[in-house]
Image (cartoon, rainbow, N blue to C red):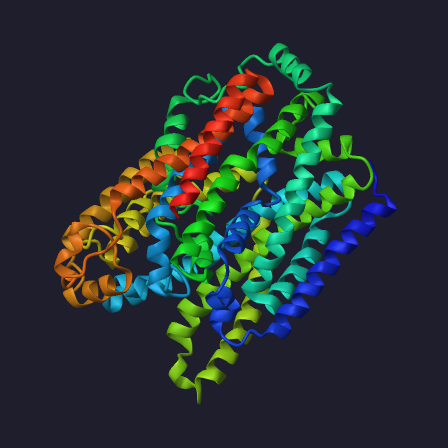
Amino acid sequence: MSFDTFDYLVIAGYVALLVLVAVIAKRRGQNSLDDYFAGGKNLPWWLVGISMVATTFAADTPLAITGLVAEYGIAGNWFWWSWMFSGVIAVFIYARLWKRAGVLTDVEFLELRYGGKPASFLRGFRALYFAFPFNCVIMGWVTVGMAKILAVLTGADQWLIITILYALIAAYIALSGLWGVVVTDFVQFFIAMIGTIALAYFSVDHVGGLAELKTQLTTTLDFDVFSFNPFANPEIPIATALVWVGMAWWATWNPGAEPGGGGYVAQRMFSAKDERHAVGGTLLFNITMYAIRPWPWILVALVSLVVFPDLTDKEAGYPMMMKEVLPAGWFGLMIVAFLSAFVSTISTQLNWGSSYVINDFYKRFVKKTDQFDSEASAQKHYVLVSRLTTIAMAGIAILVSYFFDSVKGGWQFIQALSAGIGGVLILRWFWPRINAWSEISAMVASGIGAVATTIMGLGYAEGIIATTVVSTTTWLAVTFLTKPESNETLTRYFARVRPMGKGWQPYSEGKLSHDQLKPALINIAMSITVILFFLYGMGELFFGDSIAGAFFLGGGGYLGWRLVRKI
C-alpha cells in the first residue's frame, strides 16, 4: 500500500486542525500557570475524561499489545489490564481529594501533606526526578513505537521525521498549553477509534472472518491464544502472572494508572470544574480505556500472527497490517490516527513534565514570585519559561528514544524503577504517620533496587518482587525511625482535603470527612465488574458463545448505567 492523493488530503486536514487550535488557544490567552497547565481549572467532565483516554491512546500502545498477544496470547494483556484496579480506585477515592487540594500539580501537593525542609526537598527532587528520568523514558518508548510505524509505512528515515514531529508538537504545545491539548485530544480520540476499528474490520476480513481466524490460530499455535486466564497459560510464568494481577497495579508507578491517582491523571482532575466533574471524567476515562479500546487492537494482533507468522519483531506486525489491508483513504486516516495518538501523548507529557519543572522547581526554588514587581509580571515570566522548557524537554526525549528497541521494554523499565513506591503513595491519604522521609526513602530504595536486580540478572517478575520488598521495608522502617509531621501541618492538610479515615480525627477539629469508604468500595467493585464483563463479553461474542457474550455485555451495560446514576 502506498500513499494516495486522498491520503495526503486527510493528513493535511489534520495538520490544519492543529494550527487552528493553536491559534485559538493563543488568542484565548495563557496569562497564568493555571491557564497554561490546568486549562483555567474550568473543564467539563466529558472533555477531561476523553483527554485522559486520548493521552493513553499512544502510538506505542497497539504495538506493545501486538507483542504481548504474540508472546502470551490474549492473557498477556493482564500486563496492563490490572492497572484498572488502581484506575477505578482513583475515581471513587482520590478524585475528590485531588480536586479539594487546590494545587496545580501533584508534586505541589507534597508541601500541603508534609511540612518543613524535608517536604521542600521532596517537592524539588520529585519534580526533577519525574520530569526527566520518568517522563523522558515514557516519551522515549512512545517515540520508538512511532518510529517503527514510520519505518514500516514510509521506508523513510524515521528519526528525521520524528525530529520534525517533535519540533512541530513542541511549538504547538508552547503556544496552546493544556487547553489546546484537551481540545485536540477530544478530536484525536475519535479519529483514532474510527481508524483502529476500521483496521480491525479490514484485517479480519483479510483472513476470511472471525471463524477462519480462530481455526487458523488454533491449528498453528501450541498454546491457547484465546485464554483470558494468565495463570492457566503455560507461556506465562506463575511469578509473572502474580506480579501482573496482584502487585504491579499498587506497587509500581504506571503512567495513567498511578497508585494514589497522580501524574497527568491528577493534572486533568485539577483542570475539572468541580469535584463531580473530576469524578465523572476519571470514570469515563477508565471505562473507555479498559472496556472499549482493547479489542480492535487485539483483533489486529491476532490476525498479524496468521499473516506474518515468521516476523522477528512481533510489535511491527501492527503497522504491517495497516500496509497490508487498508485501502486508499482509510490508509491516510490510519496515519492520521497514529499521528493523533502520538501528538496527544507527547503533548501531554511535555506539558505535564514542564509543569513540574516550572511550578515545583523553578518557581519554588529559583525565581520566586516575590522577586517580581507584580503578580502579573511574574505569571507572564513563568509562562514564557514554561514554553522554553517544553521545547528543551522535547529535545531530551528524542535523545532518550535511542536507548529503547521495544515498547514493552520501556513499560517494564518504568515498573522496575518505581517498584515499591506505590504503597506510600496510597497510604499517605489514610495514615497520618507517613512523613516526607517515607516518600524520599521509597524512591531512593526503589531506584537502587532496580539497578541492583538488573546487575544480579533477575528477570522481570523476580526483580519487581525483590525491589518492592526492599523498598517497602525501607520506607516503613524510615517512617517509624523519623518524627511524624507536626499537628499544625496535619491539621492544615485535613482542613483543605478532608480525607476519610478515623486516623484523622485528632487533626479534624471535630469536622470529619463526608466521604465514606463502604460506598466507595461498592462503586469500585461495580466498575471493575463492568470492565471485565465488557472485555470477556466481547471475547465470547467474537470467538466463543454469542449468547454468553450478549449476557456479559448486557450485564456490563446495566451495571454501568447504575454506576453512572450514582455520580
